[in-house]
Amino acid sequence: MLMKAKHVNKALEEAVPLRNPIKIHEAMRYSLLAGGKRVRPVLCIASCELVGGEESIAMPMACALEMIHTMSLIHDDLPCMDDDDLRRGKPTNHKTFGEDTAILAGDALLSLAFEHVAAKTRNVSAERVVRAIAEMSSAVGSQGLVAGQIVDLASEGKDVSLSDLEYIHVHKTAKLLEAAVVCGAVMGGGDVIEIEKVRKYARCIGLLFQVVDDILDVTKSSKELGKTAGKDLVSDKATYPKLMGIENAKKFAGKLLGQAIQELDYFEADRAAPLYHLAIYIAGRQN
Amino acid sequence: MLMKAKHVNKALEEAVPLRNPIKIHEAMRYSLLAGGKRVRPVLCIASCELVGGEESIAMPMACALEMIHTMSLIHDDLPCMDDDDLRRGKPTNHKTFGEDTAILAGDALLSLAFEHVAAKTRNVSAERVVRAIAEMSSAVGSQGLVAGQIVDLASEGKDVSLSDLEYIHVHKTAKLLEAAVVCGAVMGGGDVIEIEKVRKYARCIGLLFQVVDDILDVTKSSKELGKTAGKDLVSDKATYPKLMGIENAKKFAGKLLGQAIQELDYFEADRAAPLYHLAIYIAGRQN
Image: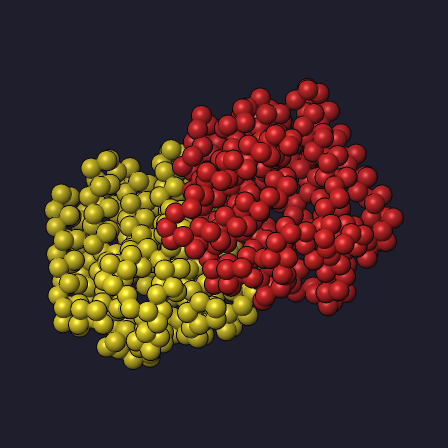
């Protein structure tokens, strides 16, 4: 898994060379190569291998998912959105490059994601590439990341129900994780049943990811997280620990982990091992 | 041409229905359906028909180009960018919906552009769809619209050479117009020579478009333009009239128009008529 993340980092480094105009590429690379956990790319590759595909055919898609994730972080951190100063242990993009460049770096990463998949994917039928692009893009827009962020912004300072909270997390986090897993299986040549199984796995993982994030936000310091801790509490945002208590949130995380693992039963144990371990990693991560 | 623009407006209206979350879709529709000239979609469809394709097969791509164009207008108008209050005769997106929503509406339109092409294009081979997506996306990112905008922002208040000015315009305007024409021909089934011819036509049109824009900025009032006039002068931006004088700028426009029309000689006169008239329309437009 660590090795996969290293491959992803190398591919990302090559996907965004430092060229003219220098400033925009510096800004793109600053956030993209800041050493995130590469959860989405690794999920994508693991899912591709689960259905019998090779790492290389999923790599452009894996990189694209990280570009999109990074774009959403850069834009969400802006002063007019969540107004965050710290991300992945470093000053946020707009703190370093200014708001204008940060917005443009996000835009450039988003369009590069699609360009990268369309221009760099090899040994996959064009039909599957088009299908994966449709899946990935639907996880970003007004029914995906953007939907989650706009409802999240609207809910600040208000009483938020558990169903609102789930809406936010499904859209801000789970949909792109789901796209990562499904796109990996599409690129890898998965059939209808395989793709449905990994989609269900991904839905559990997506929710799990956010529940763990919320738990970490109330239990860890900023230094340990590499981003401003307790922020969700201070800004009065809804979180699972706040709505159901920290212990129930932890139980809920355990339940989601169990469901995710169950979906993997359908596959050969060897091939399913990376996704199995990824689920456990997501449940147990400390930052 | 007016009829084509009406078809585009209808297709755009259907592409972004007003659904939940309401606010983001209102913001997307506010700018997308604000009645622009639809130059890019019409160019795309005309180019598709030039090589023998039907309007319907290019329509999703045509809509996508307008979504991307609108996204770039929304983001460029933001206070941290060009800080514009008026666009297409109405308050800019962030003036109406707030900066956060304006940024997200742009992001959503950009991702919807790719989703729309990938999910809605019919009767075109997947190979051609992938190729068109690669072409379109390369016109947006750090070698396209974003490159133009970042260099434009960096050049404010500085002495700008004619070659810098051309860089800005090629990237901010010409590349997307070129993508519109090329993608239309790709979708329509054009061969290598046809695609090369329309690409050259598009390059002339692209530059022409910007030269005319600059001329209008110094010769028209805000009311006539539907956006803040004289803005480029006030903000000390480089423009063709400023660098070569208004009369030379007009001559340059005439030369570009001639070159564009020459490229159309290769095609049957009947089929080339719409692109011929579009070139003349772009040269002669008054707002």
